[in-house]
Image (cartoon, rainbow, N blue to C red; front, top):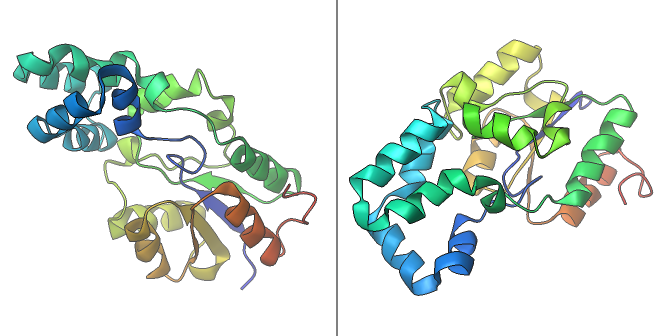
Length: 206
């Protein structure tokens, strides 16, 4: 079947997402390691991605750990610094696909409030043809249900879809449904794959 839509993850595909790197730059690696050992910050973020309130979830966690209160609140208060920088080449690929009439969907583990906040800084987040944001769907990758919901909403499935994500478990879940998949390790590899699939020319993918 011909590919009929391209599906992008966002974190580490369109925007770099490295919380540890952010904290290393602000509080130093040693203190960051101690905090991540003491507090399940990724578990906190997972709750946001499942639709729990952005501000309330992070601030409540901060109050539970007074020794780390100020640092935990940075996950909210300095969130745009953490979700940065944009991967410009990936954004160009998204734009090039849409310029050729190829629908581009997001499929992302992202909170409701955090996504809305990010979109005030990153205009391209409002430019997908369809948005599939876990916070609204109340299910996260790699659960099979989130992929199924995209299929149900779009009427597309299997090899009508090609999906790029930076996590092997998310890719494996999509592959199990028959989607074309690409494990994102950098924008050039994704560009080359889109060219190989005949979706973009080398010039369009540059």
